[in-house]
Length: 283
Ligand SMILES: Nc1nc2c(ncn2[C@@H]2O[C@H](COP(=O)(O)OP(=O)(O)OP(=O)(O)O)[C@@H](O)[C@H]2O)c(=O)[nH]1
Ligand SMILES: [Mg+2]
Image 1: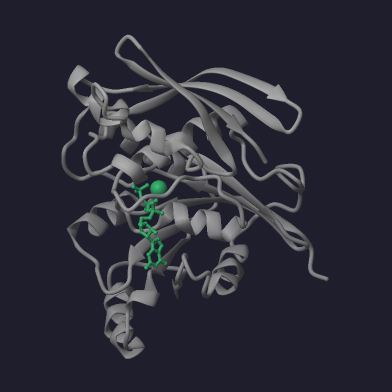
Image 2 (image 1 turned 180 degrees about the horizontal axis):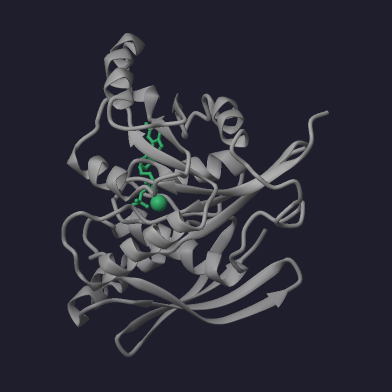
């Protein structure tokens, strides 16, 4: 058997190309939330895969913003730049047959001297695979890349090929994390993220991006996690989108059974400008 290698790998790209879906598919666990809306990921999130011959420490990043540079987006972009400075290899994720100015803006960020693998995601959307060939040629002309690997994160296609290319660039001969660890984030953080994901899924079209989730109480009760969370919205007017008005029940009730990983809403209530729900996160 070959010797073990380990290292850090940044996953970067413009919003919505499937970075978080790819991270989850690579490590086989849901550590980063996913939605069809751009700007889903807001923080750097580490996902760890330990195999017999390698430990991959992936860092998922927010989609790099090229417009609407408000304070939140600037903070997220800073996070992307920091992640790039601290890794051994970069997975630059693009969409099959679509490479535009937003992708070029990401490419310009990539530090010299760090190997970059282009991951061409969503190949399942390309009916005729021959159409990929001119696109791959175009990508090869966009810069110096260690490899170009077409994949489908949702179908888990070609992920072994991607891991093989990535492993070549892992420098260490010792593990960076324990063999059983899958993320550096706490259960509390993940609980808030799962709730935010369900908000995006259920009312993402109506609710502005500014909505945030704060965990107010997190009690470990055997296999259960008893959680009180506040959904914080930007304006009073947004409150009714989440919790409903008068007799109309809002979408918060639909979080029942939707909060992910077996979570169940068992009570929802309202306080001040916040929408609060108590969740029992089961395993
Ligand atoms: N068809 C197809 N859809 C995919 C694939 N990978 C991701 N998606 C979809 O693309 C959308 C965005 O996925 P995310 O993983 O949230 O994308 P992201 O790049 O992390 O997005 P941000 O965090 O907002 O930058 C979701 O609807 C995914 O289901 C894929 O391989 N094929
Ligand atoms: Mg993401």
